[in-house]
Image 1 (spheres, rainbow, N blue to C red):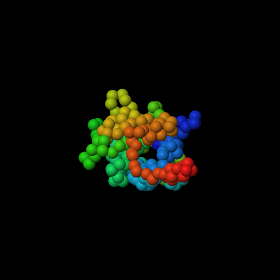
Image 2 (image 1 turned 90 degrees about the horizontal axis):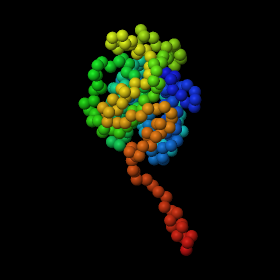
Image 3 (image 1 turned 135 degrees about the horizontal axis):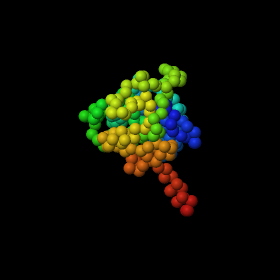
Image 4 (image 1 turned 30 degrees about the horizontal axis):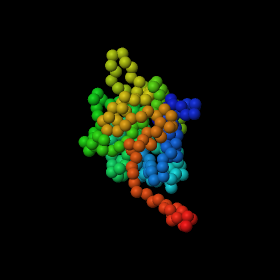
Length: 235
């Protein structure tokens, strides 16, 4: 997600930067009463780091915590996206029956999946949790920045640094480069019974998360004092 192959306001930025900008726009657009929480993904797990809270009363806290999500929070140099999605589903289920999820990724499995490998999901029924898989990244393979434990730049990943897949014919292994693996994410979305959307600009995520198919009608307090006040004024 640190690969710089997407744009924001006409400037090249990392995928993570675009994802954060999109989420900031979502926070300002969601109606009061909506709840948002944060999870992070690395290796094969998605871990909830902030349980969903109401957006209007916790707006500043949500913004501040969002800005602190970066590559330094990873706990392994691996990206088992398929398994990460299943753990995102389990995390949503553990919070509550009506909880959905949004999983933002370039879809690149590292190490690569074996042929016909699918994630373990015997405890997951497709479609039982609503959600979105959001694909982010460019269409051309790009170098992957390498960073130290404190986030300092350390060059780029080289072919000998990563697990490469099995080459077929004259096809080269390019797992040390990264691009959006859109078909893989679409396949995962179908397997999980959720939706897929590509993130090319911040408003794409807002459109997805404001989709009325995912809205929940909940009882809420409404101020009705204007009714007797209006009657009194008429009298």
